[in-house]
Image (cartoon, rainbow, N blue to C red; front, side):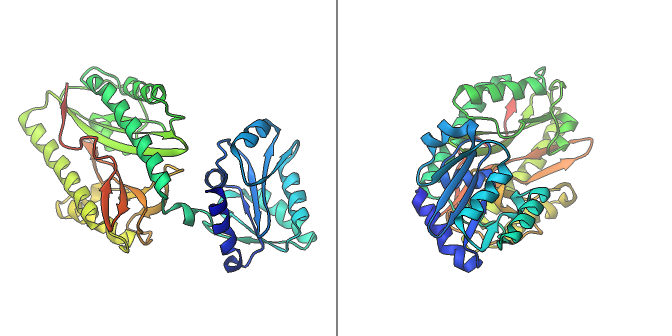
Length: 364
């Protein structure tokens, strides 16, 4: 797999009009090499693949990284990168502009220019490979989803009036770690009542109250791949009028998501896919309360391409994995979001998170 991925990069060097590529994005480094540490650098040329990491990772790189020349260093990383680039004797070096801080870029540019090396930005060089998932990657994503689903099941009985938002989040994260998650890639979101009108509300010590809605957005990392899921629950105790309003909003969101699911096919533009979902909410009169995009890619990063919004177009392709997560958020009332992960396969949409019930549920 490492050789295949390196070959794909090498096949593009001439198209990019460079002789080598400097990779500094840690997710891309993981994708190319299998390295699970937090910092390293890769340099790829037509003949060589060099992996640079500091002394903390000597044993780890020997165990994890195959198919590369391993170079360990002590001292300043940037100086070692510069010396290694000089060694490979190339004149045009591509780099990832979104993954190189400005000060490092300036230092590299000035020093390398003296040595006749030109830095050329290559936008999303490795991300364009990552966006379409291999079969092995899909299996790893599915394992992360199964773990996250099992963790939710263990805490469902705690979703009841009196429980605190922060306690639910801590317990859910604990269960994911207990089941084998490598890490929790983002702060678990638990928002209830009026606070559920905040799509990314921070945790609080607020207790859940009878008749409220509670939204839980959670995920985990397993084998370097991610799960990202959201469910909204109703708490027992609402009046008939309150429950009718909650059910109405919930069904609109569910219908919007279903419209997006039905719209998924290879070749559709992500703007049009967002429109499939957004149209349902707008026609129901709640367009002003759907404030974010319909979805985003998930893989080695929680948020990656494709981005599914009304303003950022890209073509949906076979093998992509992404979320569909419409929501309605009404200030002083509350909100509903339903987020599922889907796979484009066989020309249609497969729901990877289907085992996690998305129908109207009353807890407590």
